[in-house]
Image (tube, rainbow, N blue to C red; front, side):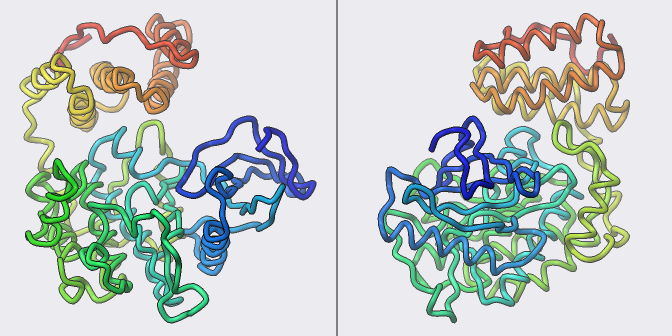
Length: 432
Protein backbone atom coordinates (compact mmCIF):
# COMPACT_ATOMS: atom_id res chain seq x y z
CA UNK A 1 0.00 0.00 0.00
CA UNK A 2 1.04 3.63 -0.60
CA UNK A 3 1.20 6.10 2.30
CA UNK A 4 -1.66 8.60 2.15
CA UNK A 5 -3.92 6.23 0.19
CA UNK A 6 -7.61 7.03 0.70
CA UNK A 7 -10.04 4.14 1.18
CA UNK A 8 -13.69 4.79 0.36
CA UNK A 9 -12.79 8.52 0.34
CA UNK A 10 -12.84 8.21 4.11
CA UNK A 11 -9.86 6.37 5.63
CA UNK A 12 -6.48 8.01 4.86
CA UNK A 13 -3.45 5.81 5.51
CA UNK A 14 -0.54 7.16 7.54
CA UNK A 15 3.07 7.54 6.46
CA UNK A 16 4.38 4.14 7.51
CA UNK A 17 2.89 0.69 8.21
CA UNK A 18 2.99 -0.46 11.82
CA UNK A 19 3.74 -4.16 11.54
CA UNK A 20 2.82 -7.48 10.07
CA UNK A 21 0.61 -9.53 12.39
CA UNK A 22 0.25 -13.07 11.05
CA UNK A 23 -1.65 -12.79 7.79
CA UNK A 24 -2.07 -9.00 7.90
CA UNK A 25 -0.28 -5.77 7.07
CA UNK A 26 -1.24 -3.09 9.61
CA UNK A 27 -1.44 0.67 8.97
CA UNK A 28 -2.39 3.66 11.11
CA UNK A 29 -5.06 5.77 9.44
CA UNK A 30 -7.40 8.68 9.97
CA UNK A 31 -11.15 8.38 9.66
CA UNK A 32 -11.77 11.74 7.94
CA UNK A 33 -15.55 11.50 8.28
CA UNK A 34 -15.58 11.09 12.06
CA UNK A 35 -12.16 12.72 12.63
CA UNK A 36 -10.65 9.89 14.66
CA UNK A 37 -7.57 7.67 14.41
CA UNK A 38 -8.14 4.07 13.35
CA UNK A 39 -6.17 0.98 12.41
CA UNK A 40 -6.47 -0.65 8.97
CA UNK A 41 -5.45 -4.29 8.50
CA UNK A 42 -4.89 -5.57 4.95
CA UNK A 43 -4.42 -9.13 3.80
CA UNK A 44 -0.70 -9.65 3.25
CA UNK A 45 -0.25 -9.20 -0.52
CA UNK A 46 2.72 -11.59 -0.65
CA UNK A 47 0.64 -14.47 0.76
CA UNK A 48 -2.83 -13.68 -0.55
CA UNK A 49 -4.86 -16.59 -1.84
CA UNK A 50 -8.51 -17.63 -1.60
CA UNK A 51 -8.01 -19.47 1.68
CA UNK A 52 -6.17 -16.54 3.31
CA UNK A 53 -8.86 -14.09 2.18
CA UNK A 54 -11.54 -16.36 3.62
CA UNK A 55 -9.73 -16.61 6.95
CA UNK A 56 -9.17 -12.84 7.05
CA UNK A 57 -12.86 -12.05 6.51
CA UNK A 58 -13.82 -14.74 9.00
CA UNK A 59 -11.64 -13.15 11.71
CA UNK A 60 -13.25 -9.75 11.06
CA UNK A 61 -16.76 -11.19 11.33
CA UNK A 62 -15.96 -13.10 14.53
CA UNK A 63 -14.40 -10.01 16.12
CA UNK A 64 -17.42 -7.91 15.14
CA UNK A 65 -19.80 -10.45 16.67
CA UNK A 66 -18.00 -10.26 20.01
CA UNK A 67 -19.38 -6.87 21.06
CA UNK A 68 -17.43 -6.25 24.27
CA UNK A 69 -15.37 -3.29 25.57
CA UNK A 70 -12.41 -5.64 26.01
CA UNK A 71 -12.24 -6.33 22.24
CA UNK A 72 -11.27 -3.71 19.61
CA UNK A 73 -14.37 -2.45 17.78
CA UNK A 74 -14.69 -3.32 14.08
CA UNK A 75 -15.65 -0.13 12.23
CA UNK A 76 -15.70 -1.26 8.60
CA UNK A 77 -14.82 -4.01 6.12
CA UNK A 78 -13.88 -3.43 2.50
CA UNK A 79 -11.50 -4.06 -0.38
CA UNK A 80 -8.97 -1.85 -2.15
CA UNK A 81 -7.02 -2.86 -5.24
CA UNK A 82 -8.16 -6.44 -4.77
CA UNK A 83 -6.93 -6.57 -1.17
CA UNK A 84 -9.51 -7.01 1.60
CA UNK A 85 -9.13 -4.80 4.65
CA UNK A 86 -10.78 -4.26 8.00
CA UNK A 87 -10.94 -0.95 9.90
CA UNK A 88 -10.48 -1.33 13.65
CA UNK A 89 -10.51 0.82 16.75
CA UNK A 90 -7.05 2.23 17.50
CA UNK A 91 -5.68 1.17 20.89
CA UNK A 92 -3.26 3.60 22.53
CA UNK A 93 -1.26 1.20 24.60
CA UNK A 94 1.29 -1.62 24.72
CA UNK A 95 1.01 -5.39 24.39
CA UNK A 96 1.40 -7.36 27.59
CA UNK A 97 4.46 -9.09 26.14
CA UNK A 98 6.20 -5.74 25.56
CA UNK A 99 5.03 -4.53 28.97
CA UNK A 100 6.68 -7.46 30.74
CA UNK A 101 9.81 -7.12 28.59
CA UNK A 102 10.10 -3.47 29.66
CA UNK A 103 8.89 -3.60 33.26
CA UNK A 104 9.60 -7.16 34.36
CA UNK A 105 7.00 -8.98 36.50
CA UNK A 106 4.00 -6.72 37.04
CA UNK A 107 2.59 -5.54 40.39
CA UNK A 108 0.20 -8.09 41.83
CA UNK A 109 -2.77 -5.75 41.63
CA UNK A 110 -2.22 -5.21 37.93
CA UNK A 111 -1.84 -8.94 37.28
CA UNK A 112 -5.21 -9.51 38.89
CA UNK A 113 -6.87 -6.54 37.14
CA UNK A 114 -5.58 -7.63 33.72
CA UNK A 115 -6.63 -11.23 34.37
CA UNK A 116 -10.12 -10.18 35.48
CA UNK A 117 -10.58 -8.12 32.32
CA UNK A 118 -9.49 -11.01 30.08
CA UNK A 119 -11.85 -13.26 32.06
CA UNK A 120 -14.73 -10.93 31.24
CA UNK A 121 -13.88 -11.21 27.52
CA UNK A 122 -13.80 -15.01 27.78
CA UNK A 123 -17.19 -14.94 29.49
CA UNK A 124 -18.63 -12.98 26.56
CA UNK A 125 -16.93 -15.32 24.08
CA UNK A 126 -18.42 -18.37 25.75
CA UNK A 127 -21.91 -16.92 25.46
CA UNK A 128 -21.34 -16.93 21.67
CA UNK A 129 -19.70 -20.38 21.73
CA UNK A 130 -16.45 -18.74 20.57
CA UNK A 131 -13.01 -20.20 21.45
CA UNK A 132 -10.07 -17.84 20.85
CA UNK A 133 -7.36 -20.57 20.92
CA UNK A 134 -4.41 -18.15 21.14
CA UNK A 135 -4.65 -16.28 24.45
CA UNK A 136 -1.14 -15.06 25.28
CA UNK A 137 0.60 -11.81 26.34
CA UNK A 138 1.27 -10.62 22.78
CA UNK A 139 -2.44 -10.95 21.96
CA UNK A 140 -3.62 -8.50 24.61
CA UNK A 141 -2.93 -4.80 25.08
CA UNK A 142 -3.06 -2.53 28.13
CA UNK A 143 -4.13 0.94 27.06
CA UNK A 144 -3.24 4.18 28.81
CA UNK A 145 -6.47 4.17 30.79
CA UNK A 146 -5.78 0.76 32.32
CA UNK A 147 -8.23 -1.12 30.13
CA UNK A 148 -7.25 -4.39 28.46
CA UNK A 149 -8.09 -5.34 24.87
CA UNK A 150 -7.88 -8.93 23.62
CA UNK A 151 -6.58 -9.09 20.04
CA UNK A 152 -6.18 -11.43 17.08
CA UNK A 153 -9.11 -13.77 16.59
CA UNK A 154 -7.43 -15.33 13.55
CA UNK A 155 -7.43 -18.81 15.15
CA UNK A 156 -10.85 -18.53 16.80
CA UNK A 157 -13.49 -21.19 16.24
CA UNK A 158 -17.19 -21.62 16.98
CA UNK A 159 -17.57 -25.41 17.17
CA UNK A 160 -21.39 -25.20 17.21
CA UNK A 161 -21.66 -22.93 14.15
CA UNK A 162 -20.76 -24.47 10.79
CA UNK A 163 -20.11 -21.03 9.29
CA UNK A 164 -17.13 -20.50 11.61
CA UNK A 165 -16.11 -23.92 12.89
CA UNK A 166 -13.91 -25.08 10.03
CA UNK A 167 -10.78 -23.32 8.90
CA UNK A 168 -7.87 -24.49 6.75
CA UNK A 169 -4.60 -23.86 8.57
CA UNK A 170 -2.13 -23.78 5.73
CA UNK A 171 1.33 -23.73 7.29
CA UNK A 172 -0.03 -22.21 10.53
CA UNK A 173 0.23 -23.62 14.02
CA UNK A 174 -2.98 -23.86 16.02
CA UNK A 175 -1.74 -21.78 18.89
CA UNK A 176 1.56 -20.73 20.43
CA UNK A 177 3.87 -23.21 22.09
CA UNK A 178 4.17 -22.60 25.83
CA UNK A 179 0.73 -21.01 25.98
CA UNK A 180 -1.41 -23.47 24.00
CA UNK A 181 -3.26 -26.10 25.98
CA UNK A 182 -2.19 -29.77 25.89
CA UNK A 183 -5.38 -30.70 24.02
CA UNK A 184 -4.36 -28.25 21.28
CA UNK A 185 -0.95 -29.87 21.04
CA UNK A 186 -2.63 -33.26 20.68
CA UNK A 187 -4.98 -31.94 17.97
CA UNK A 188 -8.13 -32.52 20.01
CA UNK A 189 -11.33 -30.47 19.88
CA UNK A 190 -10.90 -27.23 21.90
CA UNK A 191 -13.54 -25.66 24.12
CA UNK A 192 -13.76 -22.66 26.45
CA UNK A 193 -11.39 -24.36 28.92
CA UNK A 194 -8.68 -24.21 26.26
CA UNK A 195 -8.74 -20.41 26.59
CA UNK A 196 -8.60 -20.74 30.37
CA UNK A 197 -5.27 -22.54 29.96
CA UNK A 198 -4.01 -19.62 27.85
CA UNK A 199 -5.19 -17.22 30.55
CA UNK A 200 -3.30 -19.21 33.18
CA UNK A 201 -0.12 -19.15 31.10
CA UNK A 202 -0.54 -15.40 30.57
CA UNK A 203 -1.00 -14.77 34.31
CA UNK A 204 2.09 -16.88 35.03
CA UNK A 205 4.06 -14.73 32.57
CA UNK A 206 2.82 -11.46 34.10
CA UNK A 207 3.69 -12.70 37.59
CA UNK A 208 7.15 -14.10 36.86
CA UNK A 209 8.37 -12.48 33.67
CA UNK A 210 8.55 -15.78 31.80
CA UNK A 211 6.17 -18.32 30.27
CA UNK A 212 5.35 -21.41 32.32
CA UNK A 213 7.00 -23.72 29.78
CA UNK A 214 10.05 -22.39 27.97
CA UNK A 215 12.63 -25.09 27.46
CA UNK A 216 15.66 -25.08 25.20
CA UNK A 217 13.97 -27.01 22.40
CA UNK A 218 10.47 -27.40 21.04
CA UNK A 219 10.51 -31.12 21.83
CA UNK A 220 11.34 -30.66 25.51
CA UNK A 221 8.79 -27.85 25.87
CA UNK A 222 6.06 -30.07 24.40
CA UNK A 223 7.08 -33.01 26.56
CA UNK A 224 6.95 -30.95 29.75
CA UNK A 225 3.56 -29.49 28.85
CA UNK A 226 2.12 -32.94 28.21
CA UNK A 227 3.83 -34.94 30.95
CA UNK A 228 4.87 -32.81 33.93
CA UNK A 229 2.78 -30.99 36.53
CA UNK A 230 2.44 -27.28 35.79
CA UNK A 231 4.78 -24.94 37.69
CA UNK A 232 3.59 -22.63 40.44
CA UNK A 233 4.24 -18.86 40.27
CA UNK A 234 5.13 -18.77 43.98
CA UNK A 235 8.28 -20.77 43.18
CA UNK A 236 9.61 -17.77 41.23
CA UNK A 237 7.73 -15.00 43.07
CA UNK A 238 7.34 -15.90 46.75
CA UNK A 239 5.03 -12.97 47.60
CA UNK A 240 2.31 -14.33 45.27
CA UNK A 241 -0.89 -14.77 47.37
CA UNK A 242 -1.80 -18.43 47.88
CA UNK A 243 -5.22 -17.96 46.27
CA UNK A 244 -3.64 -16.52 43.11
CA UNK A 245 -0.95 -19.21 43.02
CA UNK A 246 -3.60 -21.92 43.33
CA UNK A 247 -5.73 -20.33 40.61
CA UNK A 248 -2.88 -20.16 38.08
CA UNK A 249 -1.84 -23.70 38.91
CA UNK A 250 -5.41 -24.91 38.35
CA UNK A 251 -5.76 -23.00 35.06
CA UNK A 252 -2.62 -24.75 33.82
CA UNK A 253 -3.92 -28.23 34.58
CA UNK A 254 -3.06 -30.72 31.84
CA UNK A 255 -6.60 -32.08 31.62
CA UNK A 256 -9.47 -29.62 30.90
CA UNK A 257 -11.68 -31.26 33.58
CA UNK A 258 -9.13 -30.26 36.23
CA UNK A 259 -9.32 -26.55 35.32
CA UNK A 260 -11.98 -24.14 36.60
CA UNK A 261 -15.28 -24.87 34.90
CA UNK A 262 -15.66 -21.43 33.28
CA UNK A 263 -14.23 -17.91 33.37
CA UNK A 264 -17.10 -17.12 35.76
CA UNK A 265 -15.17 -19.15 38.37
CA UNK A 266 -11.93 -17.28 37.65
CA UNK A 267 -13.26 -13.75 37.74
CA UNK A 268 -14.40 -13.62 41.41
CA UNK A 269 -11.03 -14.97 42.57
CA UNK A 270 -9.19 -12.14 40.82
CA UNK A 271 -11.48 -9.22 41.66
CA UNK A 272 -10.64 -8.99 45.41
CA UNK A 273 -6.93 -8.76 44.50
CA UNK A 274 -7.44 -5.78 42.17
CA UNK A 275 -6.17 -2.96 44.30
CA UNK A 276 -2.88 -1.16 44.85
CA UNK A 277 -2.69 -0.33 41.13
CA UNK A 278 0.50 1.76 41.03
CA UNK A 279 1.57 3.87 38.03
CA UNK A 280 3.41 1.99 35.30
CA UNK A 281 6.23 4.28 34.15
CA UNK A 282 5.95 5.32 30.53
CA UNK A 283 2.66 3.46 30.05
CA UNK A 284 0.10 4.45 32.66
CA UNK A 285 0.52 7.35 35.06
CA UNK A 286 -3.05 8.17 36.18
CA UNK A 287 -4.09 5.38 38.52
CA UNK A 288 -7.45 7.01 39.29
CA UNK A 289 -8.35 6.79 35.61
CA UNK A 290 -7.03 3.22 35.60
CA UNK A 291 -9.45 2.18 38.33
CA UNK A 292 -12.35 3.81 36.50
CA UNK A 293 -11.42 2.00 33.28
CA UNK A 294 -11.05 -1.30 35.09
CA UNK A 295 -14.45 -0.89 36.75
CA UNK A 296 -16.04 -0.03 33.40
CA UNK A 297 -14.66 -3.13 31.72
CA UNK A 298 -15.58 -5.66 34.39
CA UNK A 299 -18.81 -3.96 35.42
CA UNK A 300 -18.03 -3.42 39.08
CA UNK A 301 -15.68 -1.51 41.40
CA UNK A 302 -12.90 -3.76 42.75
CA UNK A 303 -13.71 -5.20 46.14
CA UNK A 304 -11.57 -4.77 49.21
CA UNK A 305 -8.51 -6.98 48.85
CA UNK A 306 -7.78 -9.73 51.32
CA UNK A 307 -4.05 -9.88 50.55
CA UNK A 308 -2.84 -6.29 50.91
CA UNK A 309 0.02 -7.20 53.22
CA UNK A 310 1.03 -10.22 51.17
CA UNK A 311 1.31 -8.13 48.03
CA UNK A 312 4.26 -6.19 49.42
CA UNK A 313 5.95 -8.72 51.66
CA UNK A 314 8.49 -10.06 49.19
CA UNK A 315 10.28 -6.96 47.90
CA UNK A 316 10.80 -5.50 51.39
CA UNK A 317 13.34 -8.24 52.08
CA UNK A 318 15.53 -7.36 49.11
CA UNK A 319 19.25 -6.83 49.80
CA UNK A 320 19.74 -3.75 47.64
CA UNK A 321 23.53 -3.69 47.68
CA UNK A 322 23.85 -7.38 46.82
CA UNK A 323 21.19 -7.08 44.11
CA UNK A 324 22.98 -4.07 42.60
CA UNK A 325 26.27 -6.00 42.48
CA UNK A 326 24.48 -8.90 40.81
CA UNK A 327 22.96 -6.56 38.22
CA UNK A 328 26.37 -5.10 37.43
CA UNK A 329 27.79 -8.60 37.03
CA UNK A 330 24.99 -9.46 34.61
CA UNK A 331 25.65 -6.26 32.66
CA UNK A 332 29.37 -6.97 32.48
CA UNK A 333 28.67 -10.51 31.25
CA UNK A 334 26.45 -9.20 28.46
CA UNK A 335 23.23 -10.47 30.09
CA UNK A 336 21.51 -7.18 29.39
CA UNK A 337 17.90 -8.37 29.62
CA UNK A 338 18.41 -9.96 33.03
CA UNK A 339 20.31 -6.86 34.15
CA UNK A 340 17.46 -4.59 33.01
CA UNK A 341 14.95 -6.60 35.00
CA UNK A 342 17.18 -6.44 38.08
CA UNK A 343 17.59 -2.66 37.75
CA UNK A 344 13.81 -2.25 37.47
CA UNK A 345 13.22 -4.49 40.49
CA UNK A 346 15.65 -2.38 42.51
CA UNK A 347 13.99 0.82 41.27
CA UNK A 348 10.52 -0.40 42.30
CA UNK A 349 11.80 -1.38 45.74
CA UNK A 350 13.58 1.95 46.24
CA UNK A 351 10.55 3.91 44.96
CA UNK A 352 8.29 2.26 47.55
CA UNK A 353 10.59 3.56 50.27
CA UNK A 354 11.64 6.96 48.90
CA UNK A 355 9.16 7.89 46.15
CA UNK A 356 9.37 8.01 42.36
CA UNK A 357 11.28 11.33 42.37
CA UNK A 358 14.21 9.90 44.35
CA UNK A 359 17.50 10.41 42.47
CA UNK A 360 18.64 6.81 42.97
CA UNK A 361 15.33 5.54 41.54
CA UNK A 362 16.05 7.70 38.48
CA UNK A 363 19.57 6.24 38.11
CA UNK A 364 18.31 2.67 38.36
CA UNK A 365 15.61 3.22 35.74
CA UNK A 366 18.15 4.90 33.47
CA UNK A 367 20.38 1.84 33.73
CA UNK A 368 17.44 -0.37 32.74
CA UNK A 369 16.69 1.84 29.71
CA UNK A 370 20.32 1.75 28.58
CA UNK A 371 20.36 -2.04 28.89
CA UNK A 372 17.55 -2.18 26.29
CA UNK A 373 19.68 0.00 24.00
CA UNK A 374 22.44 -2.58 24.31
CA UNK A 375 19.90 -5.23 23.29
CA UNK A 376 19.00 -3.20 20.19
CA UNK A 377 15.45 -2.66 21.51
CA UNK A 378 15.38 1.04 20.67
CA UNK A 379 11.58 1.46 20.76
CA UNK A 380 11.40 0.06 24.27
CA UNK A 381 14.36 2.15 25.36
CA UNK A 382 12.82 5.30 23.87
CA UNK A 383 9.61 4.84 25.85
CA UNK A 384 11.61 4.55 29.05
CA UNK A 385 13.94 7.46 28.20
CA UNK A 386 10.96 9.72 27.41
CA UNK A 387 9.28 8.80 30.69
CA UNK A 388 12.50 9.61 32.58
CA UNK A 389 12.84 12.88 30.68
CA UNK A 390 9.33 13.98 31.63
CA UNK A 391 9.79 13.16 35.30
CA UNK A 392 13.22 14.84 35.43
CA UNK A 393 11.92 17.99 33.70
CA UNK A 394 9.08 18.19 36.24
CA UNK A 395 11.49 17.79 39.14
CA UNK A 396 14.51 19.87 38.05
CA UNK A 397 13.40 21.98 35.09
CA UNK A 398 14.38 21.91 31.39
CA UNK A 399 17.82 23.51 31.99
CA UNK A 400 19.08 20.73 34.26
CA UNK A 401 22.28 19.09 32.86
CA UNK A 402 20.85 15.60 33.28
CA UNK A 403 17.80 16.66 31.25
CA UNK A 404 20.13 17.85 28.49
CA UNK A 405 21.99 14.52 28.55
CA UNK A 406 18.73 12.61 28.30
CA UNK A 407 17.70 14.69 25.29
CA UNK A 408 21.00 13.89 23.59
CA UNK A 409 20.56 10.16 24.17
CA UNK A 410 16.98 10.31 22.89
CA UNK A 411 18.15 12.19 19.79
CA UNK A 412 20.79 9.53 19.09
CA UNK A 413 18.17 6.79 19.41
CA UNK A 414 15.77 8.65 17.12
CA UNK A 415 18.44 8.90 14.43
CA UNK A 416 19.25 5.21 14.69
CA UNK A 417 22.61 5.61 16.40
CA UNK A 418 23.25 3.82 19.68
CA UNK A 419 23.23 5.86 22.83
CA UNK A 420 26.40 6.27 24.86
CA UNK A 421 27.40 3.23 26.90
CA UNK A 422 26.26 3.04 30.51
CA UNK A 423 28.53 5.03 32.81
CA UNK A 424 29.55 3.76 36.24
CA UNK A 425 27.11 4.93 38.90
CA UNK A 426 26.75 4.60 42.60
CA UNK A 427 24.69 1.75 44.00
CA UNK A 428 21.17 2.15 45.32
CA UNK A 429 22.36 2.73 48.83
CA UNK A 430 24.24 5.93 47.93
CA UNK A 431 22.87 9.47 48.03
CA UNK A 432 23.40 11.94 45.20
